[in-house]
Image (cartoon, rainbow, N blue to C red; front, side):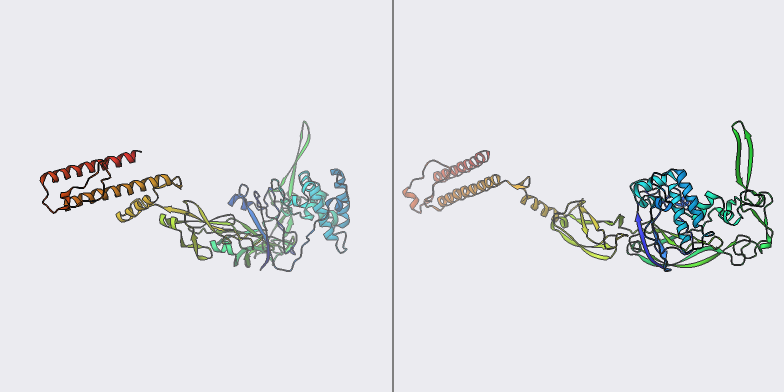
Length: 527
């Protein structure tokens, strides 16, 4: 079961997968990046060389321990920081022979040998040494502002074999065949596909909140019947007569520039240096058998689509070389309709009516944590956003830090409205008519108010006077539209019948007042 995990996100990194050197591996492994992946089929299937990736590295909870500090490589090899490559090689040669496990059985000798090999692997390479001098161990792990070139885990025995030839031959006398030639053994020096890639499909919610899974993994383990040799018995293993047991053949030819030698893998034995006369019936000569293993995995919250999680010690097992590979889980997140993810934030779109945008409202919205109430403030504009804090994606390195869920508002304006709704909108427009450029025009408003009041008073005065004339009594009011004064006449006081002359005079006076009133109103509006 996965007991712990750690994650490093990088802006432009390529995934690099490294086999462990021993079965007893650390419980927490730091991320390492390399420009060349040791997992070629991963690179071919998902294009890791050109993608922006991040890898989460976890380990099985086996109570393993790891070193948290890295020694000074110059001090390990006992050389100065400006030492030449020849000085580094000389120091490594002496120290490697001194602490090699075949020569030194003291406690801590093997760990010291591994430190020496790791230091030599870095300091003997100009590029790695330059990164180490500038950035220290962080530069080798890709944790610097550079291209992401990282430090690949070193197999101390392979490094020793590269420098001295086969390590067993150097210390045990088996590195050379009977004729005294070097034993290349190309296939045995290579790294088998110890690592396993497995695709895991997650729901959108599982990628945000995390999950626990029991994963069935198909893996290869060393055949217990033959011990990984692939032969029925050790008597069925013969040395290859074409390469002499070296695993490679050398072709030499003379040229005008000197003698040139070319080494290639033996075509007969395939680089093994040995021929199996009778194969193991259980593994059919492969040396390993396929099995199914159940791995309990804890998926951390906040993983993204195409993230890769490495679980140490859960890959293929090679007992002959005392190695075990790692399991790499590639996550595929199912997208959720209506919600999209950008980093730690989530984004959705909501549609509201224009009246809701003006007055404000509360609507129900869907989040990863269920349906929530979203308060839309009055006066919200089209394409403005409203956020719900702490409702986004947790940071995979710090789960207490969460993003927000942003809701982008789309204000809907209808193309067709009813007559009743149109009248209401027109009334609203009339109320807002006296507003110019966002502020009230008080002078214009007061002018319209005075015109309306004056016209109303004038009309009332005229009609009251006419009414009094036809009732046969003196009004007592003066016509506001004339300059003459209607004086008192005795016959106004009597209830005598109205003569045609008086009636005609009243009609002319009424028409004159009406025209005069209209003229005054027009003139006032022009002024």
